[in-house]
Image: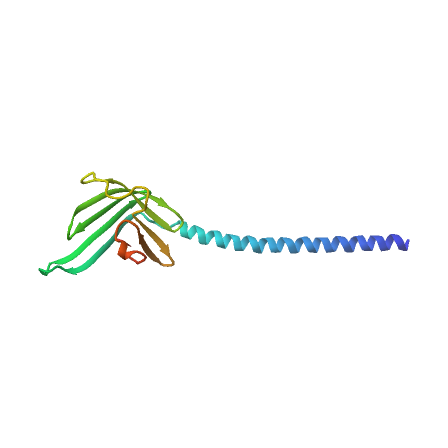
Length: 159
């Protein structure tokens, strides 16, 4: 009889340890799921950048020899992957470009598609004109074909 009781006791003990072990695994799994949900929420926040609208940058270049102010106003009107880039001001005669964009989690990458005024091939199509990147709470512009001296700065702001 004692052997049977001892075996029963060991079986119950082993079963209890297994249940406790399973419960511990379940709790760890829930903690990991909570961390994963928090990470996913952060990614979702980044993905929810509302790029649509008009983004403006005004370049101030001082004055020419005659005292005339030198400035150029740039605007980027965004509607999803479609966008229009315009430049007006000193030495720029109403540039208006149709563009296409690639949107990533925190970047809006603009590619030249067509000159809407003169129908010139102004920029290379396979190379971004500019990229607006959300870095923390700032929108930083990286340029490749325009405003090359201004790259890596906060230029365009949503109007």
